[in-house]
Length: 348
Image (cartoon, rainbow, N blue to C red):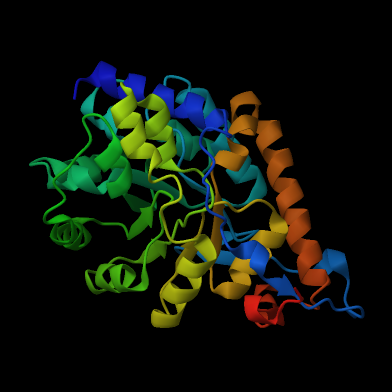
């Protein structure tokens, strides 16, 4: 695909996701089906609650990741600048969007060492598509993706549904797992694998961990539906109908998280996919996540300013802190043991 076509496609993606209603999944994340048991006597100081954790040996002040979203869009330089500054100010992790355009063309769209300068102390994660690893230069692209932003880890994103319904998408996924295994053996930083909104099942997660992957982002259904995004971009009605049939496709975030954590009790997990607020962050932590990520929910703020991104996440962090307070949890370890009513025990 020509570089101009890639940039045009990424700009289309950004426009559609900013429209939200066009991109919103028809599937619930499943987190609303759970409810914490309220603690009316916390016996603690709200302001003393410790939300801190570590990720790839770097301290975080809250268990949050600003997730991949911008790709190679022409507006991405300003967006990435705002996100990096906000991540540093808040002490949370940042994952950039796909670096494919930057790798295949001379247009970096802000994906340079400047990001590390803006965010020197927080985990910074690069990003490449799994299908790109099948290219002859795939491993070299991955190395360059890490080097261009001085990343602490590399995200490999899985998006077979999006590619299948996308005009010009990558249709041959034979050998992707082997390519990921080769990457793990040759890359100097950890590899994280994520879906883009259709979820990772426990068997797939187990295969990835067996291949040496360091962490999994379950990236379940409930947030942006990339099948719907591609349906909005479709060149004709037939292509649109093919894509829109998958608008409700995927494993809901809560289901993916619970099943993967059950089978992989020691693997670092990220929960993403329709996380709306800090209460849902708390639920995801309780269900097994080590970090919780948002992408589309913060995109509008990222278009405006660093301050807008900071304000967005300050609200999320305060909601998370109050959820800890009202479950009697002084820190994240205690939150992971807080009583949570499963769906079959909730009042109808």
